[in-house]
Image: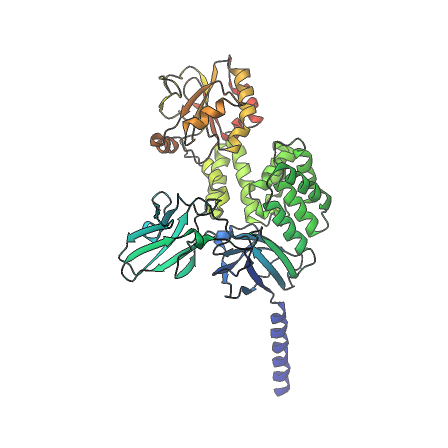
Length: 529
């Protein structure tokens, strides 16, 4: 009996050691491009493609910039590195067999501060960090900037707006401690024993040293392909013009290979940086899907993008057939959610209300945590007011540069397309060729367009109309006072948002039916001369 006990104990010891050997760790160092260790930094571990701001694991980096984190036993991971005074960085940690430890030397890009500090604004714990209620700092005679507020609390946390060039809210240079803000940046905490917050910034506090160069990552230990994969990720995130985009894409096309993780990741990035309006886009997308099938878990980072790439490559009908065929073979919840969205939109276009409602219920019940699809899920709600077969809501609006008004009543008897848009919206501007072609073709068929601008300044719209796209139809500039109420009435969650109304004031087409090449097809089918 004793011998049996010893043998069993030895077996447990071996099992324990074996289990321990399976643990793997991410270690390394962090510094900023200004050659300093950030005052506070964190490592965020998440599944590949998940929202980095919802990471389940967050580890604080040591004061000397060193970190050690136990990694989950998964092939595909991502890590976000955040640090006070720096831009956060998201990089892939991919491997075919998750058994190796990984060690990284990470240099984060230091914040680039604006030289003009005249528009500094403060937001904080006293106003729930609201941007709209942020208050200005006052410039003093000595060139410093001051903010005072009576709070009647022993401490206050705050962030500064208009301090960095990319518009983020970041921690200020005056603080007693720091805390992570949950969105990739940090808050400064100031002790206020007398209950009064008194902040004073000087330009010297923001003086930058070192090169201020872009972020970099050096893999000291890990899978053989990881260094190249991270390099591709960093290159893809720092493209500034079309020439750089084309050069990188050509490099990625040469690396694409379905037999290697690096080759498949190259295909994913090639798809990401290819704009659909480019002449060779369809050819590139076809090459990508031959390397990266819809069931490949790498598509997890592109819940909507994956379905878009396959639709562009195969055409809508073949892509939908593929999605129906493969939807139960897909392991990624994010990809499956994107496919359900695509199938739901097709059901909506086909006026298959039963299937649309079924998919809507599935998405809201099982995939509501995937924020990227929330806008599209709202479009599938069978209870929407803005839907085919329902009357267009009442409206009466002043036409731009005119004393006339336009309303749902004045447009009775005509087919018209309402298009919510803005000059700053790239997809909206991208629809200009289709809108102009449709107007030219159908304007003599009892059809017109009513564009409703979400721009901040009317002058921006006027300047746009003087440019390459004349938009020779009706225009409304939505003043701030009515923009919100009209958005709620017409369920505008994002732009562009087009809808087609028939002569009886009934909505007969919406959204994807009226974008891209589908616009001409829909108008040809529905407008009765």
